[in-house]
Length: 399
Ligand code: NAP
Image: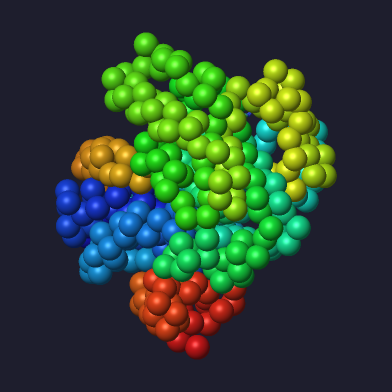
């Protein structure tokens, strides 16, 4: 008999936890469970579709899926198909790797208007997540306001700002790519509530905004001489100092020099949304108002709760909140895997039947993968995603 561990959530933190467990005990039985029929969580649904280099991390996870004692069980929702109690009763330990998939709210008037979108929903649409197939109407969108100064804000601004040619090698869903290409977008304002020295952009992602084909990045030179907080650790200060240098380069650019202008606007917070415009804090460099036919809030996420018990261990965003890049998870999930091993060590493995309902297994996922990659190769793209639940299930089941 060997211990059985359930990992709920087949995203990066879940796979890195599986990796840590298998390194410690290669014959451990691990079930990686996901509510979607597809694995890879944030890599498939959250990483911007033009950042294929980042998505390449899944090759490591593919190797884990091929391990004989690791099962993928897709299309199973804990709480619907199986309760958390049933899971705990059947497994020796449970790892929660469910991420954070609910857009945080700003709490300002007008946030529920149809042109105000949370980044999770928008990026889910761009990435073909089957729960987010409803499209925003971009046909009349000239001005966009992107709220937030993190990498998600850059992802959103960049994908809206790139030309169709720049997106050609991405796996953006065709409808989204076409809607963006045909939208009459001329201005995108990326709005931060604090100064540029506090922005959480990473350097490469910010610099990329200065290299776009149809888009010029601009900002006001005022405020760019600020210093990063002295209390920050050195890597943070270096990152922020480099951001300020990059922004100084943007301050030399002319708005309108290319068909689309991305304006970085700091010390500005939205106070109300109305159709076609955002009211912002009155001391903003843009005055008290901004035009915005589409607003995308990129201000972070919250997650669903899960039982806090001794046999339940959290990893990734479910553990630490919505911060950190994909590689951040490796060391952290490995450390949690060590804690799980310590928990299992003095305990006899549970016996009992396999409680997993019939699921989409790794072979089912490979059928989806093959189908999508074949459809993509016909167009010179990495894949064309299936976005419909039933189509995903049909292909996975060999239909
Ligand atoms: P983030 O880096 O935490 O940025 C969130 C932004 O929202 C911050 O600028 C924050 O401002 C702002 N914000 C929060 N609440 C607000 C409010 N009520 N009003 C106005 N602004 C508000 O998070 P993220 O962009 O969602 O990214 C999540 C994590 O994924 C980050 O660690 C990020 O680096 C990572 N990620 C990485 C990549 C990549 O490597 N390419 C791509 C996407 C995401 P304050 O700073 O003032 O709180």
